[in-house]
Every structure is written in structure tokens, then in C-alpha cells.
Amino acid sequence: MSKPNFTYNNSNSTCCFCSRTCNPHPDFDEPLVTTKVETNNKVIEMCINCYFDLETFSKENKQSFAEVIKAKENLLNILNKSSHA
Image 1 (spheres, rainbow, N blue to C red):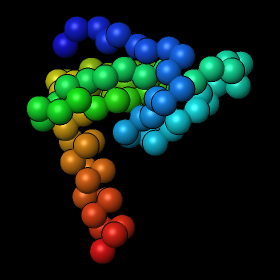
Image 2 (image 1 turned 135 degrees about the vertical axis):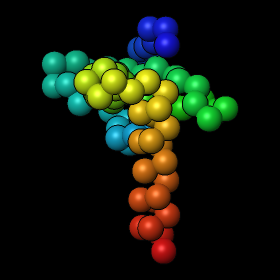
Image 3 (image 1 turned 180 degrees about the vertical axis):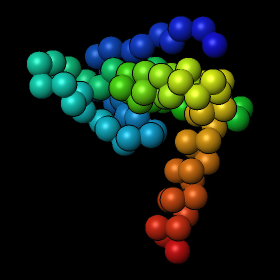
């Protein structure tokens, strides 16, 4: 996977994994920094924190980044369905 292009100063940015909409870093008064990644034939938006956490996890566990994203996305779908049951 190629290095991501992060988007700065997008006031509508949101992370599909952690659901952040605001920059959590106390030293920066700017919108959440995100990138868009294509998986399962759709584009998802994730914050810079989640991106690098998942990238580190994929390297440590010798899994492809795409596999890790798909697994996390599937887990979130299961949890969201169980919370609405």
C-alpha cells in the first residue's frame, strides 16, 4: 500500500473507526486530520491516529494493512449490530 495523503483543515472530517470529529491533540486548534482508504470496494475515512495505530499493528503481526482494516471494519459492524439488537 502506498503512503496515504492526509487531508488537513477539513471541518467535516470524521473517523469511521474512533468516531472522532475533532483533533484530540491539545496543541493544535484545527480540524481532525484524516485520510481516505479504499477497502471492500468502498472508501473509508480514518484519522491519522487510527491509521498509524493500524499500520503498526499490521507490521507487528505480519498482516497486510488491508487485512487489518477489513477485520476492524467487520468487528465494528458486528458490535454496531449487537448494540441495536
